[in-house]
Length: 536
Image (cartoon, rainbow, N blue to C red; front, side, top):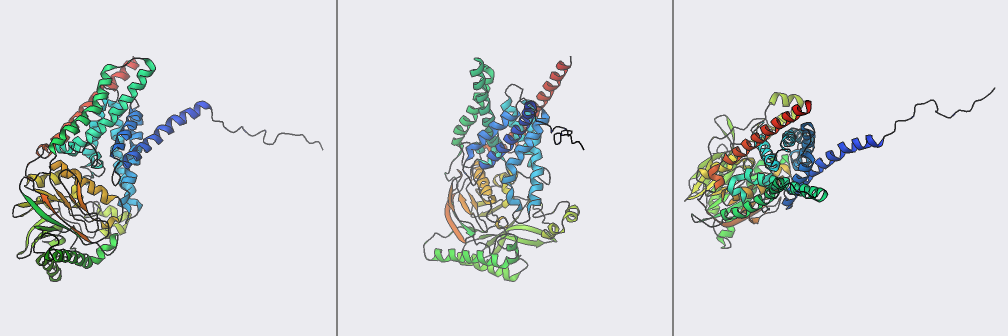
């Protein structure tokens, strides 16, 4: 028997080899994708509780580098990855108690808006002055995201990451849209300056018009922020008021705190009585008004005599009206209500929360959500109803505007308390549901931006922290820790003048949206002409 020696596997086909050209193609796809996600992550790092606000500029510079000159399809994908890199870590708190499903679903949907903006930026990136059009497109995307679906979700506006930044005074000029526009424009302008400098070094020539646009895109926002500092003032215009912020704490973290409603009420009453003892001892000044947080009395004090007695006793002890956050049933409706409780007259005024939270205070698409997961429907057994009027509690001329928790993210909900006569603002909140997550610090930064935007002192009473007193220039003068009981007492200025942002309302945002639409139309027309020219 003759055995013929053959190479093992000689008849098998050779394994495919990756050619250098194939590797270059994969690298050309993977590197921009990774860079886009990392740039989004860099933008997240610029947000509170960190004070690295300036990282937003290189984040947008990298995004500009990735999108400029690409196809709209590439812009769609890269924009989506940028949105995921930014929003996945920013909104992780939404899944703290309900699991990753709602968190991931929210991010997947919200990132679509960023993807569409990315596609739009590629279309305007070939236009003269492209950083301006691109920055306007970003703000237009934020404007849409703040309105749809389910009345919108403005969390993650660029302005809310700038509470410690040099651009903050621009909030007083044109609100969060102008503040955000300046930051994004500066980031894109930074990339344009670097791009032109590199090009000049290689070719020895400079495109003067593009260079001017690049430099101005960086210089104008910075100069505007410096000039807008004149709009920021802590001076009292209508006297002062001594406010007390009560943080009673909760028995436990997470959603379970709701099962201890009476304990939460007792904790806030007890802390108010501690304050009363300090007032009686002369250690602190008697407040003109005491501010409790949202959900400090989830037992309806109108329907429950025991809860009414607890609140009434606390108000009488401190000798000042108390703004109580309560859950109230009235005329078949469930309301998230602030009640002004006078120590002599009892309840004298109310404010019903108007911007209620989808999937938290009411359940859109209830039947569909129930089909997916019955546990989610059990968390929101009855939908809250919306209030219809802005809330201003006036105590001897000290008009306090009420903006309950989630409402602080919405421009209109804060502004109309000021146009309705508020001389200071209170943002009663309940963050116990979200544990020790970054949500508390993100929301606190919003209140700081609102203070500058409308030139009003802002108090933030929170069930479990962080509670704070914020001056009209955005400075935090007092704050508590998290998951501790405490109180803050401070004299704050009352202001009556309105900033340009307050007077202009939605006009700056509307103009930026029109600017974005104009740039997008121009960019699309230019792309069509370019394809026709190539076809010829």
